[in-house]
Structures are given as C-alpha cells and as structure tokens.
Length: 292
Image (tube, rainbow, N blue to C red; front, side, top):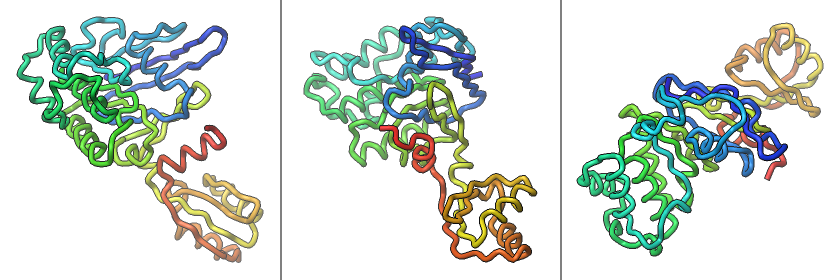
C-alpha cells in the first residue's frame, strides 16, 4: 500500500477540522487534493508527514508508519517557500539534502537541469522570484527519487511555460513509478494531470475518478419534467430536475440515444439538448457553491 490513511481526525481546540479521513492508494497514481482555502488540505498533508499531531486515526506511507525517520528516503513533501533560507543559494539547499540522505552531489546539477534552474542555481534565494522558488522546491522534493511525492500548491507563481514544464516532469515521474498527491487550486492543470480527485469538504473526503469527471453530461429541456422524473425513477437512472423543466444526467447513468427513445415512447417532446463535460472546475462549483 502506497498511502493508507484510516479514520484520521484532527482538532484545533474544539473545532474538528478533519472528520475521519480515509485514503487508500495501492498503485502509482497522480491524485489531486482539492478544496477552498481553510478546508484542511495543508493540515492533512502536514499530519501525513508528521509535522502536525492528530487526535485519532492511523497513517502509513509506502508501507511504513508515518513517524519512521527512514520514510523520507522514499517520500518527499513540497511545502510552500517559507521553508527556504534567503541567505543560502539553491545549490546550498540541495547540497544539504544530499548530505542528509547520502545522495551523490553530482545529482544536484542533474535535477537543476531537469527543473530548469541551472542558470540561477548558485544565486542566493533572497534574489529569487516566486516562480524560481517553486522550481527550487520541486528540485528539493525530487532529488531523492521518491516513491511518493506530496505537493502543496506546486504551480503557485509559475508562468505558463514553467507550469507546462512542471506538468511534464510530474507525468514523467508517474511513468517512472512515483505516486503523486498534489494540492492545487489550478483546476485546468488538475484535469490534465490527475487520475482521480479527492475533494475535501467539511472535513471529509469525496472521491471522484477522472473518467467520471470527463464523461459527457447532458441537460435536456422537456415539456413535462414531472412525467420524465417518474419514468427515469422506474428505470433507476441517476438524474436531477430543475424547475424550468430541465433534466440533467451523465452518460454513465443513461446514454443520450436511450433517453431520447424513452421520451419518444412516452410522447414527451424534447425542446433543447445541452452537452458538456463536467470536469474538475464544474464539479468544484457544484460542491462549493458560494464558498470563497
């Protein structure tokens, strides 16, 4: 098991922030962790990496207890740039990691070239832009060739070219067998990158597969939505009805030709059909409507 989180509960004083989180990942995957600010994404990642204590639950990463110091030869965690030291160079940061983990120093130039920071590797971090700091954080997190990579907002501050580069690097790592769990607000990139998405809402996990999010969804305007509702219920189809005689469903529940045939058989006229993919952004809007 690569990730196993069982019934994880975290409280801040009397507030229960994580309400029994369960995550199981058995094979290499790219998984997104999505939720509004304050939903507990960073708290969850910090608990998983033993940076925060929690009140209930168990955590194992790559088959080891989350408190095992040996874990971090196989697991990396990219945090925000507050972990960087302005008076040190990028090279200094990577050299320190190499010395702690017995990684040959030759690996520094290799990983710097891979993430595109060779030209400023030996500049002091206080002179780095936000995007340059993100490059350094990524280099620090992959220099040990981790089996599991946890990323907290890895695309923050990146221009489009850099974001594409990072996406390619993450896909390469996945193809090499690395599992990646990333927290991000960039829903377009999530659609391009991930196998599945964990939406974190009200302290609980709602899992969506990418195939479900990328399937076609239909909103059909009919003449008699009450009659349609009764027909679809008889067939145990999943659907929603809006007040303006609109019926919404996904192709995973009922394909469009079958729906049209049902309407024809029951003399229900179809006035309009709107087809779209749900995608991470639309699903996010459905789950967090009104949340800033």
